[in-house]
Amino acid sequence: MPKPIVVVGSLNFDYLIDVARLPKPNETLIGRGIRTAIGGKGLNQAAACAAFGRPVEMVGAVGADAIGQQALGHLTRKGVGTAHVRTLNDARTGQAHILVAEDGQNMIVVTPGANGRVSSADIDAAESLIAGASAVVVQLEIPLPAVRRALELARAHGILSIVNPAPADPGVLDLLPLADVVTPNELELMALTGITDLSDASLIEGLNALITAGARRAVVTLGSAGCATLAGSELIRIPAFAVRAVDATGAGDTFNGALTDRLIAGETVAEALRYASAAAAISVTRASADAAPTPREVDAFLAQHPAHTNGH
Image (tube, rainbow, N blue to C red; front, side):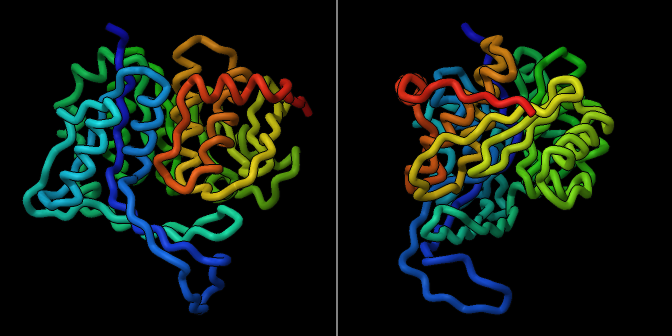
C-alpha cells in the first residue's frame, strides 16, 4: 500500500456570504446570499491531497455536535481516514465566516472551537502514523505546540514536511528549522518577513528570510500573479493561468495539496509548482472551498496551456 499523506490541522464548518465587493472598515454591506460548507485549512488540504489519488489521514479535533459529524462524514466520503480526529464533548466544532466578492476574493474570520484544543499529546498518539507517512502537512489553525510536535516527529522519522503558515503567526518562524517546504501567500510573506512590496527584489528578500530562519525551501503564492520560489539566489516565477475566478476560497489549500502530491512523486520544484498552479486555477472557477480537481482534470488543463515558467 502507498504511504499516506498525514494532514495535521483544522476542521471547520464554513458560512460563506456572497457580496458584490469586500467591505471597508466600519462599512455595512447587504449580502447577496449565504451558503454553508465543510472546511478548515486542514480538512481542505486533506481533501485536496485525496483528490489527487493518494491515501490521506487526518489528525485533528471536532466537537460533539452535528457539524462535527458532518465534517467527519465529509472526510470519509473523500477517502480521508479519521481515526486520529478526536471528538470533544466539551467543545464546539470550529467555524469560519467567509465573505466572497464577485471577483472571487475573500475575507475570512475563524473561530477555532475544538481546533484550539489539539495538543502535543494528540500528535504523539499519531506517531506511528506519522512515522509511516509519505509527507506531513500542517497549517496554523491549531495551536503552535501541536504543529511543532508534528514537525518534530516528521523530522525524527525522515518524513517530508510542508508548512502552510496560515493564518500568519510570527511564532512559526521558530518552527522553520523543522520545515522542508514553507508556503506562505503574499500577505503572509509580508507579515512574517517585513517586506512591504512584491517586487522581485522584495520577494527574494522575503523568501531568503524564511530560508535563513531554517526552512529548506520557501514558496510564495501570489494570487493572480502566480507563485515564486528561489533557485539559489535566482527568483523563479510561475505565472498564473488565465481563468475566470468565481471563488478563491480554498485555492491555497488546493495548491498545497497538489504541490505535496507532486513533490512526493519526485517532480522538480518548477514542475510541481506549475501543476499546483493549474490545480489552483481550476479550483477558483468553482464556487466552493471544496474544489480540488482530479489528476485527469489537471492533466487536461495543462494540455491546453503551454509551459510558462519565467525566471527573473
